[in-house]
Image 1 (cartoon, rainbow, N blue to C red):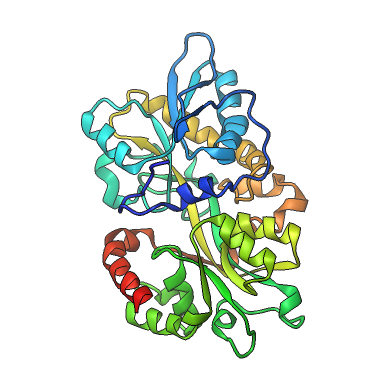
Image 2 (image 1 turned 90 degrees about the horizontal axis):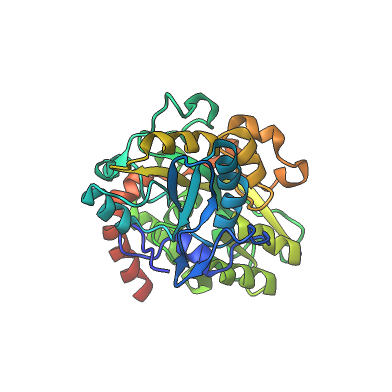
Length: 363
């Protein structure tokens, strides 16, 4: 897979797929067909000579879940054809938009793309079609609307913390109170700077602009006790094996880990990250694309999606439709304790901060 995000680094989504993030969704009746690093365009459903939409996602069980819960039902109901492609590639979105003849219509992107700074490559979301009022506050934006709400949490080995519950994120840095290795994502925009500042007493509202010097100074206090992970599978392995007593991990990996070992998820000050639907600038099927986005962000499909992926539904009305047994581990159940990552700030500053981060790693 070749998605390197907007700034030339491996995206979180690429790592999700490489790390086998899915939770066991059965193949969606042949909808997807493997092709090289991604997925070939393949009709999920066709009908009656209607419009044909090409929708692009990240692959893996994540894309299979979208096909099963969103694209196939919509196509069957509305007599259109939904064709799939993938994986998402921000550079391809830009190139297709600049060609004025894009082959992609709708693309699901990571939170590093689709903000105001990317306006030249995207169509504005038509909120006369998509019901903005039905979407969780803050997730319906000018050029993108959230596909799901995800997060990075503190997960810890409850058998190694003396029966106490570590407090995010101060106790992540307290080696005296909770001895042992920590595991964290080796990615400049993956939340490591935010958790360092939160642990150092910075209020969520004051995180940006990131104080790089202060964050690196805080990280230096546990540098020799950090085990860096670069795939979700590694994060899960370090926790399940007990090599790390706690870690900052993606929620899906935390849920999987908790099923296999005495691991508890702490939801205080979790970092909110999302996937977003965007429409490529110049799409010849823009009107139909907006209708499909309206459907994909409605209560029924977003609630159904949570059966296959542990991500929060963006529809306000979907919250009550989610299986109660799954609700506790969905980010949308814990919106009152979320810390939102500032995508716009990282879009402008990622490269310069990454230079500092790499220097610190080598020091």
